[in-house]
Length: 125
Image 1 (cartoon, rainbow, N blue to C red):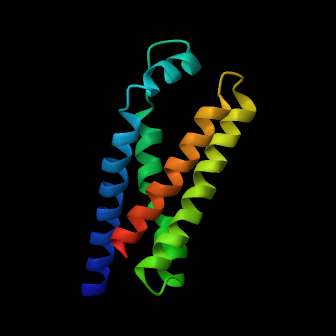
Image 2: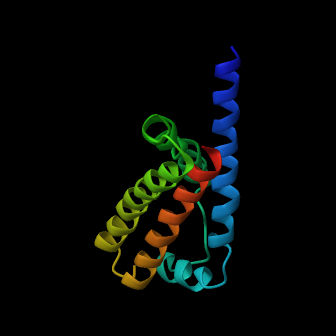
Image 3: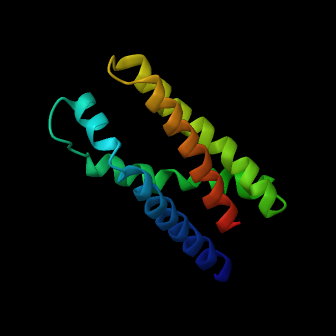
């Protein structure tokens, strides 16, 4: 029972850390014109999609990183790889299907996602 409670608590911590730290990136003024350019209207976030992302993203840590890493340094390394893969998939797909999605933004967002997932994995390991 204690192990299940600890796992659930760590999962909740991962969701909170990921969300709070990601808000720093998402709230930067440089994003507002970019999002408006892509959406061609005032920014409207799909709350359900965002919630699902923040609930599903931690699974990579618990399924792949935690079993592989033997220390915090490896958790950071594997977390960076996971973040790179997740955010590359997102940004390269967006670049492929949205003509206004810039390479500049895609690269910056991949770097951000790589660091974000790596740091949260490091903290939570």
